[in-house]
Amino acid sequence: MLSSLVALPEQLLGWIWQGNLRDMPRSRRIVTRLLRLLYVTLRDLMGGQLSLRAMSLVYTTLLSLVPLIAVSFSVLKGFGVHNQVEPILFNFLAPLGPKGAEVGEQIIGFVDNVKAGVLGSIGLAFLLYTVISLIQKIEESFNHVWQVERLRSFSQRFSNYLSVILVGPLLVFSALGITASVMSLEVVQQLMATEPFGRLFTMAAGLVPYLLICVAFTFIYIFIPNTRVKVGAAVAGALLGGILWQSTGWAFATFIASSARYAAIYSGFAILILLLIWMYLSWVILLLGAQVAFYVQNPQYLVRDHVRLVISSHLKERLGLDLMFHIARNHYRNEPPWTVDALTDQLRVPGEPVQQLLDILVGAGYLAETAEEPPAYLPCQDISTVTVADLLAGLARAGESPYLKEEDLPALAAVDRAVDQSRQARVQSLEGRTLKDLVLEAEAAG
Image (cartoon, rainbow, N blue to C red; front, side, top):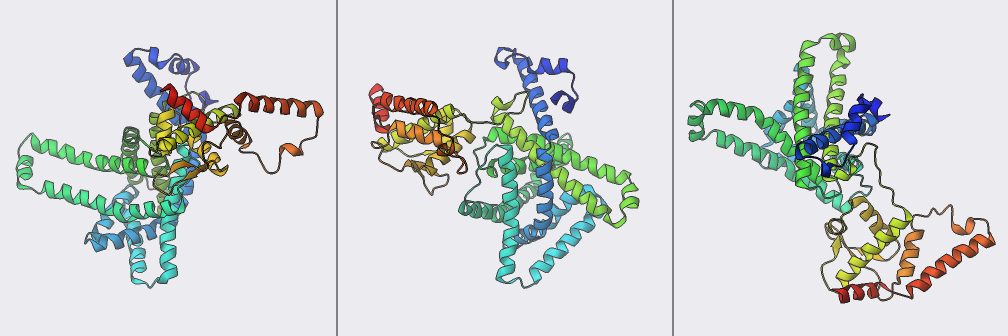
């Protein structure tokens, strides 16, 4: 099925996926890794999930665009740089051609009406809600890419999203202002008038839009997902996403300039349809870059068939006991509590199963989550009273549906006896050992 999706010969696919990367020469290892990354990225794109997420974000963006610009305008107005909103908006709409300028003017007109009107407390609350809902929808899409099921808490979302809305525009326009100030320096002007420096400056100026987009994408890839994203992975995804976004915008503008059929077919709706298409392409590219960042940071997912982690009961017990042991030992030593990222690095496993097991342990009453950012985890009970047998039994029962319990199954004497004997054997073999006993054993072993 995958070979038909990406239209690659089976022989080429076999060459890409056969062999271990560590056993290959350096040159072939780099080429093979890039080909595998390209394959899994195309596979995920053609799988449809990224397209569905992008279409959902297009709808949310249409609802939130005017409120978002209005809020950003209000913030920037306090710093005297509010007039810079319009060039950024027009630059985003530039691929739409002359009609894009008309759309931009209409949006700015809506923003002016919002500023001039009396919104009241309810109107202001709705304004902020639409902006925050857009960023929350973006976080959900990025969490899907990173295979993270847990959203930030409401307080974290409100504070983090508000910082993006308020501080983000100020940082962007501050960077643009610094760049403009440097370019206006007399020394720089003299260098630009001297060859070959003038040509180099011209070439560099053409790369500035790509650089700014890549920096913006890097910031988004690091900040938005509810997981730790390494800078290197974010930069790799941003390079692909930023270059693809700028190049697609140029190609889209060329297509519109060379084709007049869309206006004849769709008449007045043409610009709206083109705007929807451009928004859709923008979101697809942004999510595609996030997908690349995910695979760069998690190369174990670079496999031919799509992988979604499913934790077995056996792994659930082992990983859960590992987590409880590390948290209990830090508590015993009076050392700082563990966070998700620290535990992920310590155990060298993906963050998704670690977070899933921590949620199970919190729900079962074994752990408590602190209110810090990022949250840390502490034992809820005295570690000398938590037996290993009870902990393993609680992990085994985690995730059971309330609509199907063990007692709902028909009674079979032979089966019931075998299950009871197995459980009793585990309890007896552990001899009442507690979490503290495990910690003391580890401390004695050094």
